[in-house]
Length: 229
Ligand code: ADP
Ligand code: MG
Image: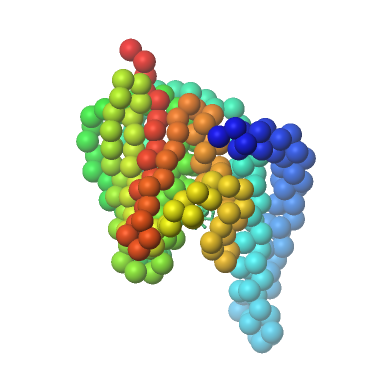
């Protein structure tokens, strides 16, 4: 999409400064968080006891917003290597599974050992998978969630992964807005996750596609380049 590309290029220029500021703001934020935690520990002060968790939550939220922006504007040059897809997925799932447990959601993946080599930047692919799976987990909204990750299809120069959830799904209208900057339907969302996904995946020569039905769930198709023979 041409519009999106132009937007992203502009963002990367403006973003240099934003990234620098965000980086600087993070340090004092971490200090403040530590201090609040220290003050609130075993305190007898009722007000402090009541409000400390709120302060910590808001600090965490600020930190999350900064992280989302940093990932968007400063993804770094992709470092392309031959990667074993099974291992990469397994590693990523162990990072995100605890978040799934918190939301009553199970993530399934069957190791196949076949069609396993991709050429990509490990960090980029992990970041994309985490963002996709996080959205899938959040879409299940407390009901018993099931997310399945599998190798969906193959071509001469790519592998397509599917990440399928049984969450709330999206309408046609919602589907069209996905990936637009700041588009979110969540009260505490940033609307940057799907943008980060398209950017990172574009940088390594892959692509991402969404299929969804309201109330049924969503399937994300992530196409990754393979080693040319
Ligand atoms: P955020 O997660 O902060 O809202 P994202 O860019 O990651 O921002 O996602 C944008 C929006 O796309 C979400 O708010 C949600 O409405 C929709 N979305 C993304 N993935 C899914 C999914 N798997 N199921 C349902 N809706 C989704
Ligand atoms: Mg998200």
